[in-house]
Length: 217
Image 1 (cartoon, rainbow, N blue to C red):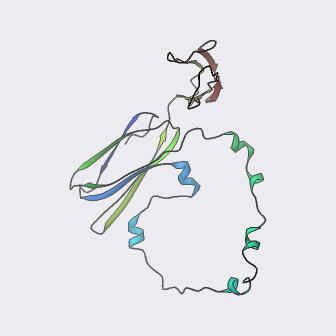
Image 2 (cartoon, helix red, strand yellow; image 1 turned 135 degrees about the vertical axis):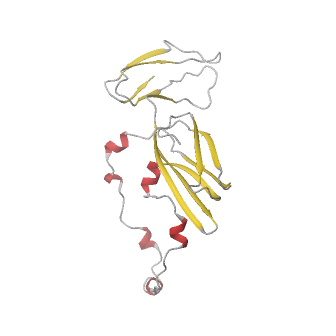
Image 3 (cartoon, one colour; image 1 turned 90 degrees about the vertical axis):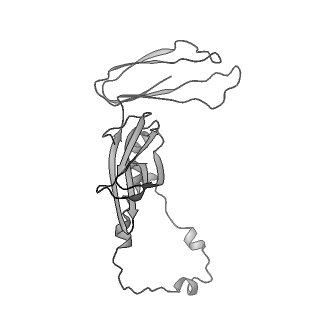
């Protein structure tokens, strides 16, 4: 697959076995930000099916059923806590305005010496995704992954209500993202059909001193 992906473009992923053997596999593409939240790693079935198992001893107790038998669960519910003040205010200002990418395909069968291609359209998204392939066949298992940035120099994200009534007036905020320091001047033009009418100018200009985002209404 490509080393860089552009949003809202067709993406092709080619899957083949390194030694040309047949296999059954699944394909997943997930936002790396989501994976980092839980430190999720690409599953490797071989490590699970062939893992060593310790001869451990399982123990448990009945203290809660004896000591707290008449106390109920109230003391566990009314526990002191709360971490709202622990969040950084700066991190809240940089909101993620694009929905995270979570795509799953499969399972698929791959014949001996064959190569499969999977094509789909990348949604409006900026960030990094990890493509993961987990495969197995006749007691042999394996997994491979690749992290790929998703970006393009200029992107626009507009927000409108789902439904508008007659004679209603709304503002159209358009968020402009630039991912290149070379982009300085940007002109935003809005076009409508016969059902909507623009009040004022339908074109506005923005100036960027560096890569970032601005909102125009």
